[in-house]
Image 1 (cartoon, helix red, strand yellow):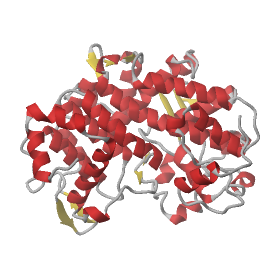
Image 2 (image 1 turned 60 degrees about the vertical axis):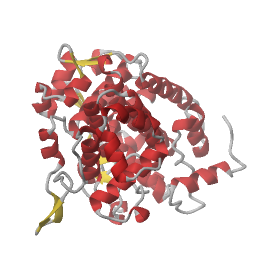
Image 3 (image 1 turned 90 degrees about the horizontal axis):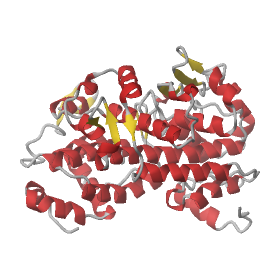
Image 4 (image 1 turned 90 degrees about the vertical axis):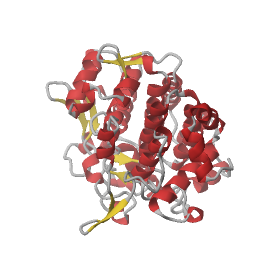
Amino acid sequence: MDYTEDEVLEILKDDSRIDEFLSSLTGDDLKKYLIYVNSKVRNVPYAKNEICSQTMVAGSLVSPNNEIQNRYFDKMANALSNVQGRKNKATMMYYLINELHLFEDGNGRTSRAVFEMLNNRDFSFENNDNFAHTACEIIGETAKVNNSDFEIQNNVTGSMGVEIYANYYLYKALIQKGIIPSTEDYTKKIIVMTDAGALLETSLNDDSTTLNNPVYIPDEINQQLSQAQIEQIQNALADNNGALVTTSGLTMLTMLLKNESTKDIKDFSYADGQMFSFPLDNNNDDKDRILGKWQKEDFFKAINIANLLKENMLDMIVDFFEYPENFIVEGQLNMREALTTKSEIIDKQDYTVLETLQKTASLDINGTQTAKNMEQLVSLLQQMSIQNDSVINCENIGKQVIIEMSDVTLEDETEQGIISNEKDIQKDIENNTNEQQL
């Protein structure tokens, strides 16, 4: 893509050219475009700006790893071609940019700017308060318009709301596919959560968190892990995106079912059997009843499942916009309409939203990306049932089942020291001549 800023803005104003232009974008084009927008709203040099290589934490959200982020540039480019309508394209991108959390700063401003560029024909960077800054004595500089104000102005459901919807429908898809049993013990639950998320107020990038990790890992296992592996466990099991229905909670539920620990699940059902809460943090007296029974390989399997579910959740958001009629709530209202118009469900509190979804939500995953994801997860779980004692073999299970979605983070690094990034881990695994093949 070789356009100036002015040329891009002129094309986006023209209804006869916008679809063809967006369909021509590659994933690499989109990556460069997002870096450029982030540079503009932060007023930093484009040449010095880049995608953050570290895990980012924003409230209860833990950003996907770089492998998922890099795959998602192609996925977003493809979705921009398939989704019809300016507002729909803009809203989908607004959510995905927030969820991917690509940059050290300015993710909210970037998402708002991209939304405006796609939806507002009169957009300009200079005359827009959605990412302009104003001085604030307490916290330095802050945007004049925050995400919440912006969402109200544009009748867009909040990011937390879309996480609840996506994770709930992901939960329903897991039940529909038989990964979670379709019995009342599970179908009547409206919330799946962990209770480690509250301890993520301090960023996982802060060195101090290595001394106060929220997720409990038995000492004898913790001593066998590198710092990179410990951080991956934290990222997987303390990610309370959506706050109520979460990928970390779904990961725990899937792991316990796979390990046939159904008694543990029932022990942590509460509120008249309507919720699950798995005790995962160090401060919980019950944490050893679940994680204390795990072997090192169980933690690695949980990382694989969590990363797959994390990407599945992002794909579910895209499915809402590509296949809106497959996801219905409150009678005839589809999820795309619920997310882009002022519907009553937008104004409801989290628990009320979940109750509404439980009573009225229906889904048909046939033909969607979610259906493909469910097949991949089924295959992954089947492979994980194979008994093996090798940490490397456990990592290979994920690679062999879903090569394009593999999360190469699980090599036993105890003899090599800390490996600082995923590319180094990938290289070391590929060069390991002693690796056993399944």
